[in-house]
Length: 401
Image (tube, rainbow, N blue to C red; front, side):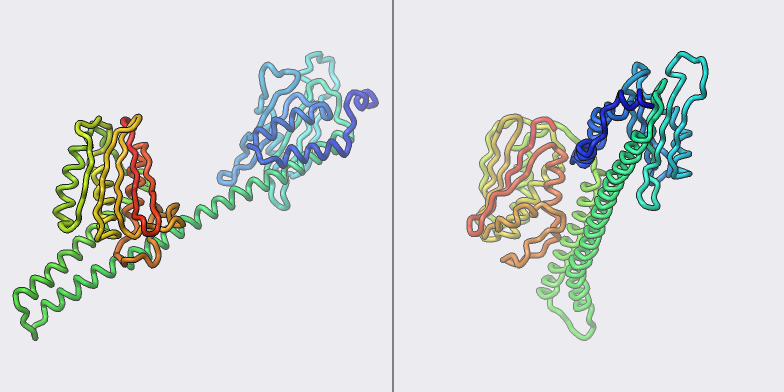
């Protein structure tokens, strides 16, 4: 016993402080454990160390960390030897000390001195930690006390990590719940408006006590037609945003010339917004990119529609230019602009600028869909704007996503 004490450095208060410092670092778990193993081994010689944790879902023991540091290291840590003992530790919640029976055996690898300790947090059993020495010396009282201290500290760190993961899980669930709540609230609100118009004007036309002349009938039917289109767009955007957010949309990448694609989009835009002045600057020829033409057209149509909605009396300048490794497209209006405090949220799902003037109808999905499509192309989308200075949307699309 004296020989054993003489071989190991004395465990002091400074040793304990250093163990605490190592364990409570904001570093990955395995990195912390590697550092701890290097520090404690001179004070507490062991050849193998294995740490088991209880899986919170399956309730099975899983090896979280294993190291071979001394004799038998060439074979690395054999974690199988500790599995039966680890289960025993978890069941009994009691320390286990195992020493080999006296024999004439000369192979130290066949003479394991094993010390196992449960990892506990109140009434919860988190797992177990097992130390093994091949060929001795036996663990003395000070070393056992030090091992118990280590198990308690490691338990606290593991409990903290579990709490952190649980908080992250709950926060994620809360965000999902909030998105669902926003989705339902937005859907209810946005559906109610066009359905109200359609129902109201249809009921009016069907009244038997009144005869409507042809002009009034056409006016009412035009409103019904417009609100039906709005309803279809809303439902399509809802479905698109859900699919894009979950990664369920397949991108049909092919070679695309943006000048031809943009011209097709502009033909439709000018028919849809006949009073809107759209100025374009598109080099011809322009280099091709790999993209999904239908989805890229959707981006352009959404950004043109966004300008028509929020800057109705402003011309729209569309500039396309070749840049390094891709193409850049800018959509610039001269409308009222967007306050800087909203720039970070403008591409969020369902986000709408509160009390925006002029008042408009919208689901808050158009820009979110644009961002999702751009990201699916490995591109970037951003905004430059200020109150009274108009708004510019910048889109970068790489040659090959």
